[in-house]
Length: 182
Image 1 (cartoon, helix red, strand yellow):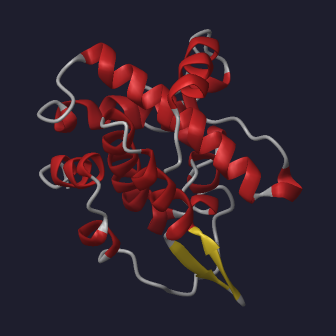
Image 2 (cartoon, one colour):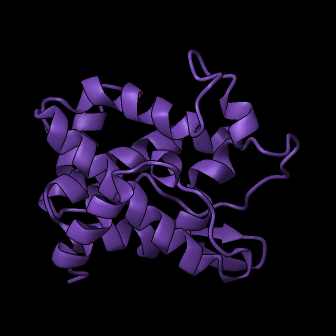
């Protein structure tokens, strides 16, 4: 999978979403047996984050909008944006995320794990560590906003490392200034 991540990021960064969409097919979600862990979405979450990071790093917010809202999943009797399923707290709850290697004391274990796990694979596309951190934070911030909007009845849910981070305020200021959903 790590060999594919730069490709996914480049597709998102450059605005050609057709190739990424080919991998997303409609399907009826199965019964969730283990509450708090949707195993079949875990690999998709890695690809979703890689695509989102590429779009944010390239300031391609039109592609990010498509990733969040135009990619759908068939959920029982209706289509819903995939953002409602590919959200860290939906795929793996915090209590289970703490079982990931080295994440037992982390407040946002899945987010922290994703950030570290994706870093090396994305270096060819986002070489600078600070740029990567900023793209990751901005992506999670926007993901949280869109997820919350799409899940109106559930209200605000924490999103990754930004939930308790002091860098959230600066990310918010820069996002408000520069985000355009073209």
